[in-house]
Length: 572
Image (cartoon, rainbow, N blue to C red; front, side, top):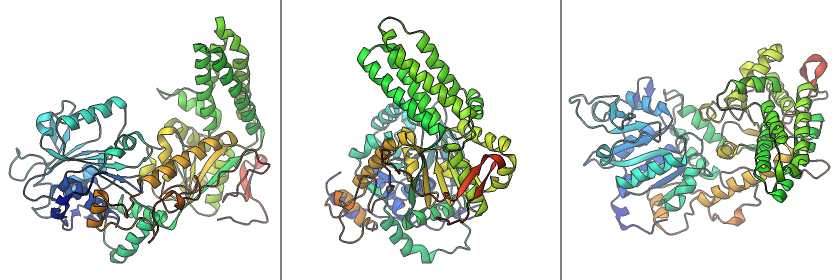
C-alpha cells in the first residue's frame, strides 16, 4: 500500500444529482455510495483501487463512470468500462437528467474488433464530439493508442474472461498509454486478476457483515419502497446485502452410504494406487492415465443427473467429453501401454475396473443414496413448503442434463416443483434472484471458488462425498484467509486508511476489534469477515453426517417420489 499522500487534502467528492431511466428513478443500494466515493478518490488522486464486491455482481459501473467523469469538472474524464455485463452499457444509454447529466452530452461508444469506436449515442449538437464512456465486454477489445491516450480511468470487472495472453495484452496496453487510475471490481478474491494486482493496489476495500449492517442501518430509513428503481439490480442486491449482514448458514450435505458411495471408495483407493505407480515408474503414458482417471473421477463426483442424460448432453457440447467416454479413454490407454509403462498396467486396470463398476452402479441402481437423491430430496422439501431452491451445476451440459432428467423421468414430480426450482451455472448465477436455499454441486471447480461466497440464500448447502471433504476444507480456508488479509485495518496508518477516513467508510469490524488472526477461530470460521463458516466433518469418524434442512424426507422407489417421514420435525 502507498504511504500517506498530502494531496488528499485537495480531493473533492462530487455528489451526482438524481438520475432517471426510462422506467423510473435510478436508485442504488446504500453500500454503493462507498464504492462511488472510492472510484472518485482513485480518479482524483490517480490511484489504483480494488473493491471486493459482496454480491458477486458489478451492476453499477455506469454510475461509477458518471462519478469518474464529474470528479473533475474542469475537463472530461474519459472512462473505459471492461465488463461482460451488457446491462451496464444498455442502462447508460437510457440515463436522463436534463442536458447536464445525460448521454446526449456525454456519448457512449463501444470498441470494434479493429480497435476503432462505434458510437451508441451521439452528442446533441455534434456528431464529432468525443465519447464520455467507452464500453467493452471483451478484454481483447482495447481501443487504439490514439483513443487510449485520452482515457483517465478504467473500471475493470474481474468477471470478464481471463486468459494469460489477454491479461498480458491489457497490462501492456495500460503501461503503454500511462492510464492514471484503474478500479478493479473483484468477485473472486482467489482469482487470477486479484492475485496479480493486490500487492500493487493503493486501496483495497472489502465489506464485512458489520460494515454492511451499519451502512444499511444508517440509510435504510431513507429508502422509499414505492419509488421505482432499477429493478433488475437494486432490489435484488439489497436483499443479498441484508442476507450478508444477518449471516448465512453453510452446511455440508454429505453422501456417506449406499452402493454409489462404496463404488467411489473402491475407485479412490485404486486411483491412489495408480498415482503411486506413476511416480515410481515415471513414464509419460502412466501420467496421461492419471490425468484421464482424475478427470473421470471429478466428472462422476459432480454428477447430479442420471448418467444417460449427462452423456447425451455432453456429447452435444463441442468442448465436453462424456463420462462414459472418459472410461473408454482410459481403456484405450491401458491397451496401448508398452515398454516400461507396461509395468503399470495392473494399477490402470484396477482404476478402469473401478470406474466401470461406478458407471454401472449409477446406471443400474434404484438407490438414491447419492447426489441425485439429495437433489430430489431438496426439491420435494421446498415444493411442499412453498419455498425456492437454487441448484448450481458445474456447466451448461450438466444443467441441461438435470433439467431433462427431471422433465422426462420424473414428469409429475417436476411439474409440481418447477416453479420452486431454479437451475443455474456459475455463468448465470450472479444474475439470479434470491431464494430460500442454494445447493452447490460440490466443492466448486478451481476457477469457481467464489461460488462459496454466493449471497443468494440464507442457507447454502454443499453436496459432498467423503473424498471431497479435504478439498472443501482447503477452499474455505484459502477464501477466509484472503478475505481476512484483504479487509482494511483502519488502525493502520497510510494512504489506504487516509482515503477511507476521508470518504467516511464504515468501520469493517466492531469497535475496538483489530483484524488480526486471533479474530478467526478456525480455518473454516471467518470470524467477523465476509467468509464462509462451515463445519467440515472428519470422514474417518464413525458418524460424519450433519443435519440438513431436508432430513425429514425419504425417497421411495416404489412411488417414484419423496415422502415426508412421520413424525416430522423441520430443521428450518
